[in-house]
Length: 392
Figure (cartoon, rainbow, N blue to C red):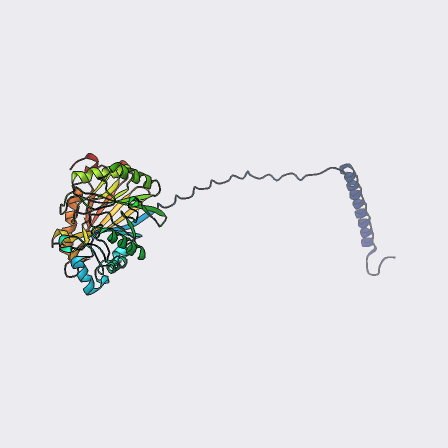
């Protein structure tokens, strides 16, 4: 019976629609069931989507590492006896380097030639240049931050064997390395190595003088042995410095013997030559892209006023590309203190111009900037100097 209030015509249409829907649903179920029977036991994989191929972008090469670099300060002769010793006793060891301390302590390594034994025993005749300084004066070296000194010179043996041994003890006690002397004489040539900011640095020291002198490491005694020692040491380090006590005292230009010796040492494996003994500045040269500081002059000494008391602090920068830059800052040893100071503008410029001229005469790329001497040395392929040509 139709529901009250609902037209019979709508009920009939609804009944027909319901029946039709049921029939269609049954057909779908039947069809699906048949298809499942046919596909039973088969694996159906979805069709892959149609996408564009993925192209990997090239990965850029990592940037090359920055070149390794070494920064050093090197100076010439330090003598702590005679009038210098008197000033130390009067004013204290810290007074000697007070004016330049900051500059020489800043680099990774600092080097000097120690021109006197540090001993309480042995001969002592300072008026005749037989030196023997009080071991307490080593505080001048520690105050300056010196890492290494050369003992290959004509004054290390002034106080005899006992003087040498006391000197080595004193330096060891104050953590200052040395080259050019050893408790076992036959081992005096042996190198010293440092690791400075990832760069392995080696040092050797020799004398090469035309007169008889006391030294445990003489090039002139057996040059071939020295060359072999240099070659062997170079295989064990990145940069090799060779200190040489040579030349003629008070001569402002290097000798032909110095030139030949420098070239032979570099051919053997030296990367930089640190020269001293003339007690005055000589020029900065180069051979095969390696610097030659022929004479760094006096740094702490009590000699006659004038060019003997004028020299420089040499700062060296080396890159593993083979490039060198040298900056020489003029200093003057003031007699009232017997220690280096920065001289007046006029005197600084005079010292700088002299070193510039001496270096230019050797073919170096040199200029004066703000009273400092700048020398640039390119690798071997780009370097041609008076040293290469064999010119005096």
